[in-house]
Image 1 (cartoon, helix red, strand yellow):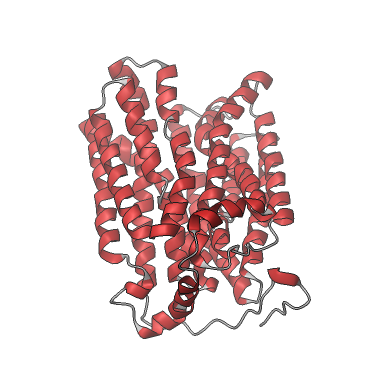
Image 2: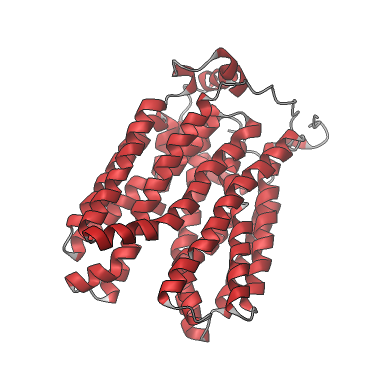
Length: 443
């Protein structure tokens, strides 16, 4: 099926039928496997401090204020570093940058077990935030290089689903290790998990035009020759200059504002779900911890499904950029409705069910959220930059969510207004991705 672009401006292009998938030629999926391993290990390193926080505070005499400061130290460096690392990945490629970053975050995670002062904890969490920032821009760049347009969201959905897996398994793994060996050794062991991902990444990943094991059939399928011709034509142009130019376009601002609101909701779940279950639905601490894993399990399934839905639209002739934003808008709208229903639900079973529905529909957007950054640019040169700019804005929303939710709950005496605010922000997401994100960047 083809889409005629003559009557519709630069947003629509002719979409040819995808080439036949080469049977038994799946080197591109090996890249996704190592990215998935790195993703899970990064989320284990992010989440283990939350599990260990009560014991650390007790052993070292930290106040709740000091521990809250330590817990928040990851977010801001991570958000800010998204901007330069996206440019760096577009300039030098993901292989070395991601390898160094993964090694650094593994060391920082393992060394946390040796920390005994607030200053050392803060320093190591800052290093963790800085070093984990290249992961998703690098993964997006790799996916853009290794996958044809009609498979990008599906490929992205695998390692995005791994974020949900990491969130679900981090508490039980960290708890089991901590109870058996103490929190110091727990950090050391979890940090060493990342070494597996580093070894896998260095051994497997190359740019496709440089990979010695890439077959001619798979090379043709993913369009390496065409893409490299584009890169060669742009070789002497300044990535730094074009990085600044992207801020001229409404599409980029729509992605940033939409991402801010979308990630606000995700971090609302991450930071306040157990408290909501305990205070509003009267779960015990133990039960709340177990039940909190259910939405992330639902989210992991939905992330895989959302990528398939988006790619299915591309196969049916919808321009990839539009397929991504339609999926984001639909998922955000359904999540907003689920959160409103949660706000007025009666009974814990209904509330938990609706929270699972909300995370499921939210996670339908996640693969398209990342794949969109590869589809709004006309070549692969600025994929990492656009993806990291969007994620920078998203993490600002994530940093704002815990604070805003706490203020709302304190001010109004419950979670109902907080849920309504989160739902309202998702309407902003729908307007941004549906209304402003319409034109590809002519870069």
